[in-house]
Each structure stands twice: as structure tokens, then as C-alpha cells.
Image (tube, rainbow, N blue to C red; front, top):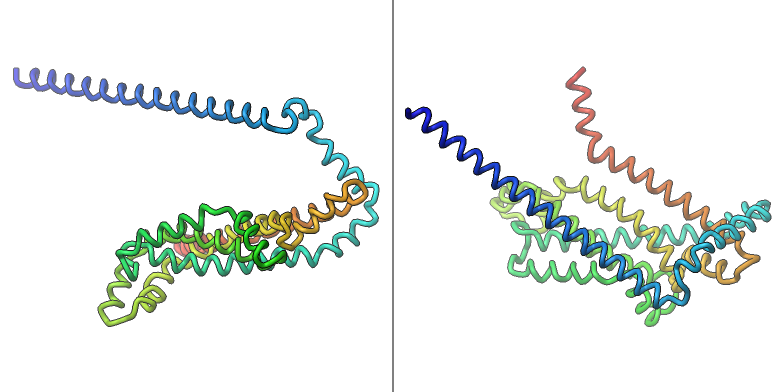
Length: 300
């Protein structure tokens, strides 16, 4: 009799668990459906408002979507003999753009590293100021590079320096956020050991934390370098120098200069693809290379 009662109770408990689970599934599906409906409604209304306020309707001009690329490619094919000369002409501007991206990435990454260490629990030099440093990173990350560049161009004039400062400022906030998440996974035992022998905060961070997180720091830095190349090219449109400035000039002249715009597009495309492939290869070696080598040795 006891066994039958126990089995009956177990069946009722299992039925109750199943009913609760199905109720949770139904609630989750209902919430997902509501979120999807809200998302579609926001997208639709936003598109309608933007289309109404635009100078021309989206659907009215949709058939002209490929007119500009067709004109650029057509003129580029007509003047294909001039393409090598254009590539050499704009190569210094491309190098300037890469230099802007490299300098801003280096400066922003170093500043972001310091901010991340100051805003990570267990590592911060001033624990009470952790919220302050996190809000500083939020502000730096929230301000678009183009807004900062426009302000700096107004103060300093056009050139690569405003672009470098603007991109470095935004990079510091973005990298500080990523680095702080990496720091959370670092072991604090080396830090505690260094603190026990009287090491300073800088020594504890440099010897106890950085060796653990350096591969991830470098990987994120390479990824940000790719982003900053595109950002520096875009900032050239507002007078911040580099190849973006040359592209704006070539496009503003209209027909007759589209072959130069095509050469600039080719330079940008090739550069971004090459940098992306190289950085992906380096990141792969940093994150998986050592473990794969150990696995091969162990299997041998």
C-alpha cells in the first residue's frame, strides 16, 4: 500500500512539474510574440516617418538604386588605363588613413587598459571610484567619433590630428568596457601574492594581471584596428584628412572624376580585406594556437 501511495504521489508531482514547465513555455512564447510585434511595429512606423520626411520617397527612387554604382564602374572601365596611376596617386592618402587608425588604436587601447583596471572589482586602485570610471567609459563610448571630430575640427582646423583624437577617445571607452570583462575572468591569486610582498599597484597589475589577459587584449586591439580604419576613412568626409577626404573630393566633382573614386574604393576594399585576414590569423594563433600545439604533442 505504501509503494502504491508513493508512486501515486510521484506521478502527481511529475504532472505538476510538467504543467509548470508548459506554463512557462507558453509565457515565454507569448512574450517573444509580443516583442516581435513591437519590433515590427517600431520598424514599420520608423520607416514610414523617415520616408515621409525624406526629400524623396524611398519607393519612388528605388529603381535608381544602382545608377550611381553603374556610372562609377562605367567610367572606371572607360578609363581603365589610368587606374594604376590613380592607385599610386592616392596611396599616400591611404597610408595616412592607416596611420591615423594605428595611432588612435594604440592610444585608445592603452587608455582603455588603464580605465578597465581601475574599474574592475578586486583590481581597482580606488574601489570607491569604480562607478565613476565606469561612467567615464560610458560617456566616451556613447559619443560618436564624427561628433568629436567636428568639434575638434572647429577648434584645431582640418587634418589628421582631430580624426586621431576623436577615434582614440571613442576607442578608449569601447576597449575599456571589453577589457574590464576580460579582467573579471583573471585569477587574483598572483595579485594577492604580489601584494603580500609589498608590490605597488602598478607592479601588481603589470606582473599579476597583464600576463593573463594580454592575448585577449591584443586580439580585441586588432579587431578594433579594423573598425578604426573604416572610421578614419569616414571622418575624411568631414575634413579630417586621409583617403576619405580624397574620396569626398572625387565624388563631389561628379562625372569625369568617377574613375578616381573607383580607384579609392579599390584601395579601401583591398586594405580592409588584407587587414581583416591578417588580424583574424593573428587572433586565431593567439587564442587557439597554443592549445592546438599541446594537443598535437599529446596525441603524438
